[in-house]
Length: 115
Length: 114
Image (cartoon, rainbow over all chains, first blue to last red; front, side):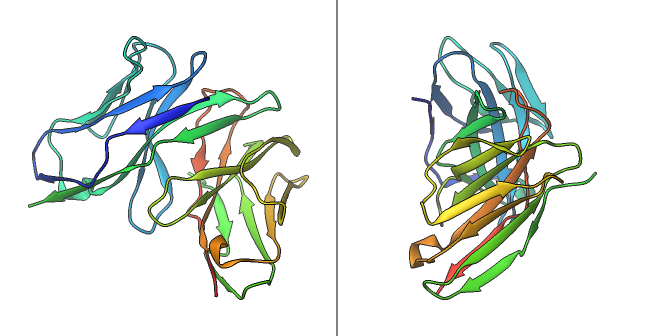
């Protein structure tokens, strides 16, 4: 079946440090890959996505590249800010025969950025 | 831009009571999903609807049922509530039925069962 593995947190960084959150997946076929972010007490917000191999998703300084050969979709940011403190979820989706798609999430990685 | 609306935002119930959660998708989105997120957990898929028909079912207890109405809003009905049902319940919507379509999440309903 489909699954997503993320590095465990919490990850604690100083402001302006480089961020990498590792994500690998297991899936049949060619899933789409997503990063969602969840701020305390809020819902999940789409951060970025990639729909095919070698695609790079980017948003708000975050980037992730869909690597089929290593089945990975690592999240990176060159310089984190305190406001980036949140939980980050990697997810893959597959189409449902009945319509729509199904998201499978990783366990989430909590990021704490300190001054 | 319009977002997914969920109501109520907070709900407190006693064991064995029933609860109804409502979800209003983004306009022109025809697919709705329900997820359950326990404390410190990742969201777990419960059920989805496409064009008012159930499209998939995940780990949803038999005590729960859901439907999507003609105006595309959806309701999750939960009966015989148990302490373990305490969680955040998210609704999401997407504009179509492809795997590449993004799911947009609502703010969630926090259910507490006492």
